[in-house]
Length: 314
Image: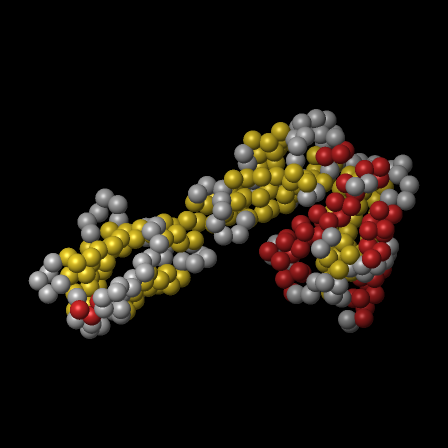
């Protein structure tokens, strides 16, 4: 048995205690066993050895453990540690009986380093660009979806999605996904709205029964707040994408408050629209809003409920 060559290490996924194990039909205790390592362009260095079945010397360092029969465990592989590790078996006359080398290939999962703006407000008939930058090794591929559907009518080049001659139908949830085949994909969401100076405004409350309140949801800058906000607003946006006649201009989160988790939301519609909340009311009748379990009715006076909640806590 020999380690696979190359051995791929995904940083932060399987980079802790990487085990390189060799097994031979002849017991290594009969030989002098030597471990070496080398970086490209550098000199090979011996890092540990064992003679006649005795313990390896050194057997434990900050970087590795060496153990019998012939196992090298790399404690925490870093990005710059793409070594080639070699094992040599020598007989009593110091002749090489067998040797084998394993190269370590370190890859890095995708990470979005510059996400698209979370809630851009666009102007009808103007142009706008959504940009999503990501890092990783190999360099990630960027793909886009709008309300869960792959984009086809938009012009996309790599990490940028272009909205030309902005229309009301461009309102929605745009997700960029960075993937390179290693680790989890990285995603970021942009909830695109349209500026409106004379819109019909509706404020509602929705109780998210599937969510658990944490103090982090009091902080709009926390990761927990931003993650839940983008996911929740995306679900509402998707409802109105399926109902374009209701002419949704923007959807925004006012705040989260405790009580499971209650979300107060403000929606803006074309002023002439009748019964603008009906698509959302119909959507939650079964207690579901996308991946969320929610109350089956909208709170149509969330500010009053919030004031009552604050009085109750005094």
